[in-house]
Image (tube, rainbow, N blue to C red; front, side, top):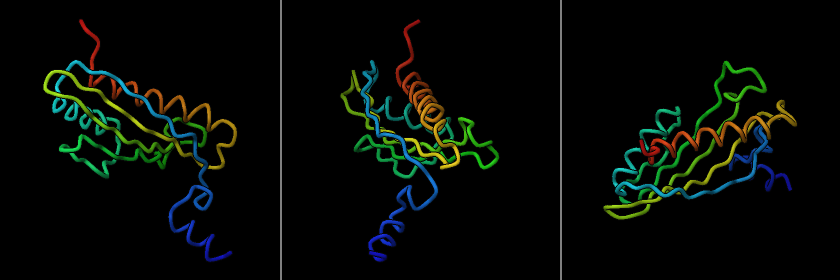
Length: 138
């Protein structure tokens, strides 16, 4: 039993790190730009959101990253939420779509407020990325 638990902790499961995890959510947003342009915009937006890029594969249209919590953030602040994010850009030279899969993680100290605070932060970050990829018409 100890070996199993130790193996799970090595994998970085939230229960072993003092973190709680929110549900994984997915969405797809259409963009009236080429696939290449959408990928460049998505990467720029992720970088602007202080997301550490783990995988940036322009050929497959994939960006995987983490926005780590601010070490100076007070418990309960939106910046104390960690965000795990995968962006997938698909499309052709005239249209594309931006798919995202994301999840938040927060300190166990945030308790019941983590769900509300971190989910709101995750939603806002994804909205800003989406708006960068496909800005509203002027």
